[in-house]
Length: 211
Figure 1 (spheres, rainbow, N blue to C red):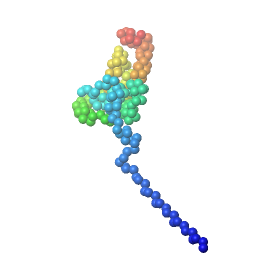
Figure 2: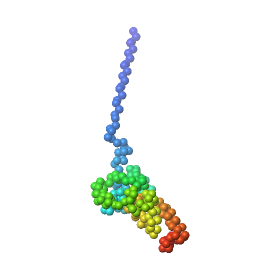
Figure 3: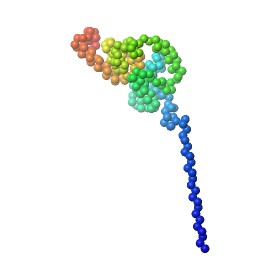
Figure 4: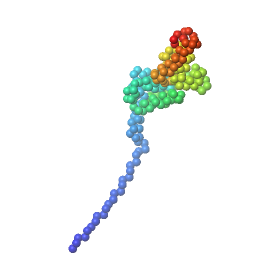
């Protein structure tokens, strides 16, 4: 007698439900960026960086910090973590567009608030002309809305002003400009000054400076 062939019933496993990611858990890239103390990274990368002075406003200090970082060499810049680079790039863009610089992540909040509290009264009582610009800058109109325009304006107002004195004023006003751009734009004004001196349109004492 032939044996009866039996077949095993095929069992199909139900797929396990997918585990949803925790909405509060940040991706590895974001978590890594959040762990970066941008302020400490920038200050540690700078040689001889001075902390905010009592007379320095919060915005002026942040502008100085950003300017010092932009003047570092390429190797030091490349060693900065990306979040630190992004803050500096944002600060430079804010200065160019005459908008407020965002707070530097990782900077002690207490220190920033104390500095802001000391300078708020002085800042709000400062006289300004049209568009909120100080009187010294209002006369130049659009020429003074950028670091390069402001540098050229200062030299035109006082042709005897030294480059270092112009840079100090830019620093005080929170205007960031690279050394190469600074020298290039001033050289354009000095070239015009030489033409004026040759044509006899400048006072002898000033003409001698551009002879």
